[in-house]
Amino acid sequence: MKKLFKILLNTIPRPILIRLSYVVRPFMESFLKGSTYTDPIDGKSFKSFLPYGYGEQRHNVLSPSTLSLERHRLLWLFLTKETNFFTDHLKVLHFAPEQAFYKRFRNIPHLDYTTTDLNSPLADIKADICNLPFDDNTYDVILCNHVLEHIPDDTQAMKELYRVMKPGGWGVFQIPQDLNRATTFEDNSITDKKERAKIFGQYDHVRVYGRDYFDKLRSIGFQVEEVDYTKTFEKEDIERYCLAQGEIIPFVRK
Image 1: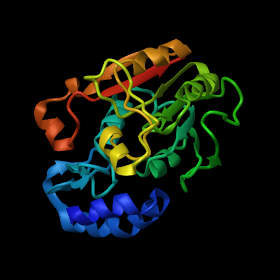
Image 2: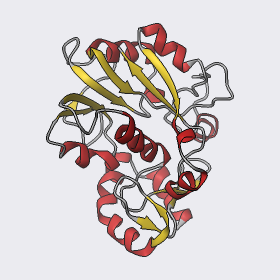
Image 3: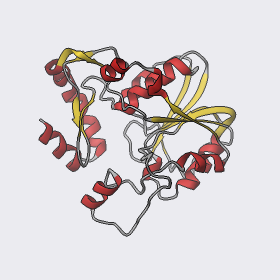
Image 4: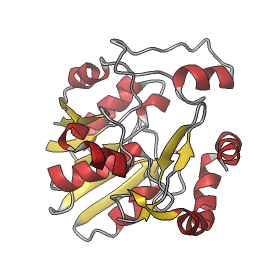
């Protein structure tokens, strides 16, 4: 199964994978049903989670029910316990909407919820993050997770995110990040897909973000809180939810 997952991830385009996942998900849920690990997004438990990764695969990280990864489960817990996302009337813009969240957020009656992306079949509006078709100061909340590492001009993308966020608004801009790096690394001369996957974590990533990511957001105008939310959980809860110890949530405000 692990070998099959790796082949599928590296050969099938993401939009097709999204559609296929709806077909195979019920079978995975049934096969892996158990009590060792729990997905906090839907409360279902399993004897194990699935492996995931484009290069070297991480084991026991992909939920069979919601298809969430570590970052999705951490974000869900953060939004639930630390924000007004599930309680207040908010105008929300969600980039590249994740399957784990899409239908759940869509069905929250107090949210004015819009999704956007260039390629995702889940996007309401096809748009370039560097040139958004939205008015200034429009959104109370912006979710833009694991998107900026794909964008060559991430500075312009950040400026657009700032522009369309309302004053007093907030957002979460998660990225794959190497906290051992002081500065972000880019090298466009590396063109081989396998080499890019090895260096950048995924063949279509254009950089590896370092700790300077937060300061770059601040230079655009955002107030940034670097939230190590796993510190608020007991060790057994981190293991039960299959979270990534020490992962930082970039919580931004305008």
